Image (cartoon, rainbow, N blue to C red):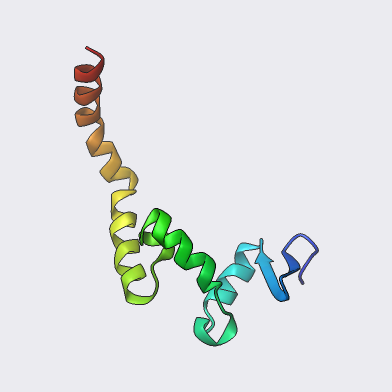
Length: 96
């Protein structure tokens, strides 16, 4: 059952926008064939790409998957924990 807090719907510039708040709805939506179920605001996205680059946020398809794998490995707790001694050395060197 969908509650009022799971999704919000808006009409902006003549386009319907669905904002999924429920993780279950987000997962179900993203398991669909993306290209046929929604369109992105390419004008807005292309402007943002020019400002912030084409990192993970604005990548799609196989490129997104590859970048996501890299970021996931880099944000793994065990990996970050191995960096703590190096970070301590750098911080001690910088603040003397």
